[in-house]
Length: 81
Image (cartoon, rainbow, N blue to C red; front, side):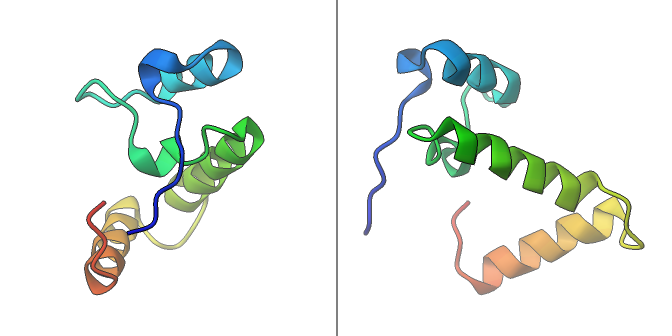
C-alpha cells in the first residue's frame, strides 16, 4: 500500500495548525484525506474549497443526494474512507 508522509495534529505549527483546528472532526482528529495535504498548505486550502463548493455550492442536486453519490462512489471504488 502506498504511503504519503503527513504532519499529525500534535506536530502541526503555524498556518497548518490553524487549519487543523478549523477542520478537526467531532471524533477529535483531522481526517487523513485532508492530512495528506499537510506538506503543502496551498493544496490543503484548495481541497477545502473544492469540497465545500462540491458539497454545499449552488446545484440542482440536493445535499442528501450529494452525500448518497459520495457513498456509492466510495463503495464502488472500495474506498475505506
